[in-house]
Image (cartoon, rainbow, N blue to C red; front, side, top):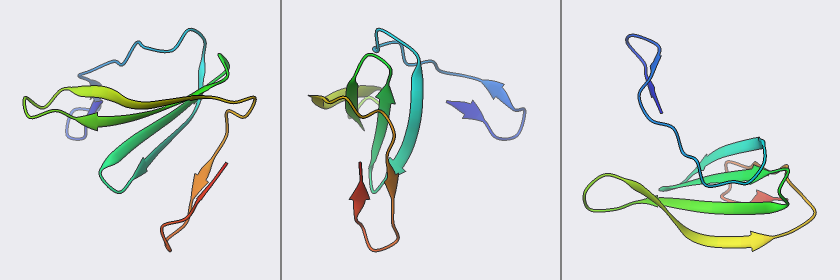
Length: 73
């Protein structure tokens, strides 16, 4: 995560085995797609940390969201 006032990195998520190619904030979730062929869905815990709440293995690492709430993979 980034501090938007200082533009400093304040948190790094290190759960993928390869480079992350796509990141999307969608509703209350963060989605990340990686060259390791996984898409991970992250959610905040009560303590404020992010943890993976869903994982899928696909050959697709790019995705986008739409204002209607649809997610395109």
